[in-house]
Image 1 (cartoon, rainbow, N blue to C red):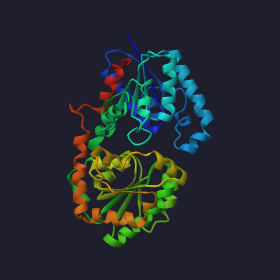
Image 2: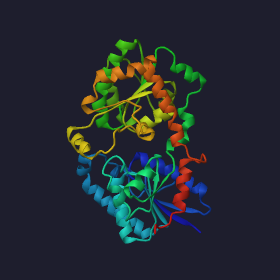
Image 3: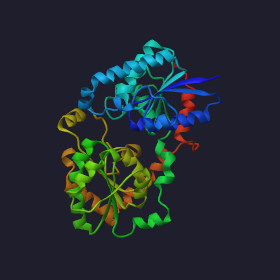
Image 4: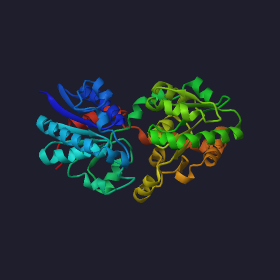
Length: 385
């Protein structure tokens, strides 16, 4: 007996999750599977024939969504029609709530008995908390990547929610330094890893600030080595902006090189995002920064409900990693906060102690891999009563 499962992702990060989920589903299921849906290169490599290119819907930010609204609406309706025609046993939407939730809510109206699982909770704990309760009519189960999210959904009246673990847990071997790399963290000159974000707007806003901060840092602590894991699609932009820096920087490319830099890094200067969790699991003390446009800032300040935008801080329920946002994101402040982490002052020891607690908060009780935990729930999904 075959089981028919639809998987719908809307951007690169969801595509990576979807590919791991596809592998885990095949490993867990006692029956042959038919897997259909929308995905990118990773899911296609796992055998998915995507309904259309994922780039059609991989849009972030208010203005870009408005520019692509006609295409997005067309792809939403196309996806819904294909799911309804296929009549799957379960639908799993993966992240990208602007697209995937629009699909799920419309599918629920046309196939009211179809179980719908949401892999990656929207950040209802951070902003627009009413979305949690608003998801109940069309989401049966949420698979959470962060350990505090099930409690948040219970508090906010959201759907059933289970912490299945973050996919980074499956990559700890790639993040943890060996003995030689631990020695390298204490060597001279100290290695600073710099991560200005993965989106063009982030890179354009943060690269000049980061370059000036590193110049100030070098004047305080002496010579430093700098490595910057460059996003391949923005390599030319990063190279151009790095030419304006007074500090020499080595660009590294690919996940393996990035993780290698993490394992040897003394400290990091990073844009807010998932990379801060990678750094935390690698045990790298960090300073976090972020800048958005003025209109995005006005909107965000009205909506954001949490005291920090740094994922490790949210997991620890304390602001252990210093963060500088908008007007506070200045070269001097970044350098002043980064210097004690490089020199080895008490601030470094305090942050290392906090980072050591991240593991305990994020581990699954039985040591199960996150993708396998997610696959079990997708396969066993039943319509909520």
